[in-house]
Structures are given as structure tokens and as C-alpha cells.
Length: 173
Image (tube, rainbow, N blue to C red; front, side, top):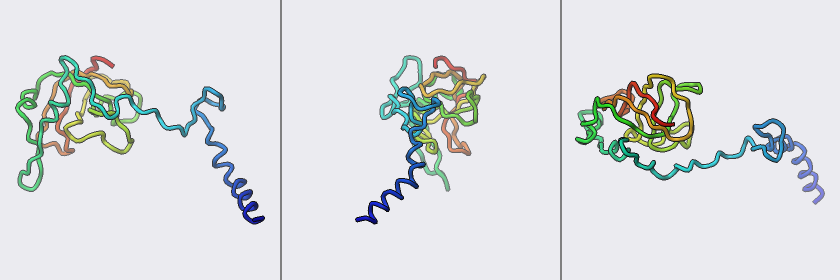
């Protein structure tokens, strides 16, 4: 019994630095309004449900009308007529920005159908991702944006992407 108390006391003494600083905050000194740095981010209100469809904006349902077909020793996308009709046309897309470069503003990024939930994972398959090449750098944010640009259907992209939007500009952010 006496050794159990001693063990507990020694354990608390040596582990105190580890648990004593979990109250550190991102607002300087701890206070009642401070948010702990180790607190999880609040869940996105968009998580688990598709973005609402907007008039004049190509939907992700349309972009999902593709299937992978085997062609010799690899799989290639087979697009629906609705998607091929959009090739090389100016369209609007709505989605979440996934940055490809460091910095607050992005000139090249991925637009996704779903909000990113993991720093190391893509939030969807190739039919839910569009590479965007913007005319001018776009400020990164967590909210969905609408971009307008020239849509390109990629039939055999080396990175496995299906879609690209070039000369893009943000319509709403």
C-alpha cells in the first residue's frame, strides 16, 4: 500500500509537465475566453452532406457521371455525354479549397466536393476533385467558394485527375 502511494506521487511529479501545459492557449496567457491549443476543431457544418445545388453552377452529381474502364493494362475514365459536353466550355463550380502550395493565397489548388477532414487525405475520389488554375491568387478559407473558368475534361492525366478549371476567378467566397 505504501509503495502504491509512493508510485503515484512519483508518477504525478514526473508527468506534471506533460499534463500541466495542456491548458496552453492560442491567445497568449490562459484565460476564460482562450481556446486550448489541443482542443479539436469544431466539425464543419458541411461534413457528411452534399453542398446545396446552385442555379447556373455545375453540380458534383453531374461530375460523378463517370466510370473507370479497363484499357489494356490500365484503367481510364469513361465520361457521360453530359460531362463531355462541358469540355472546353466556361462553367461555374462550387466547392472547398484544398491548397497545393504554402501561403495564405493560392494560384493553383484543388476544388473538392467535400470539406477536407484530414491533412493527409483527399476528401473524395477523382470525380470529386477539380484542379483549379486561377488567374490571380485566391485567399484560402474553410467555407465553400464558387469559381468560374474554362473546364477541361482530362482523359488520361498522369496524376489521375479527371477535371481541370483554367483561367479561373472566384465568383463568391
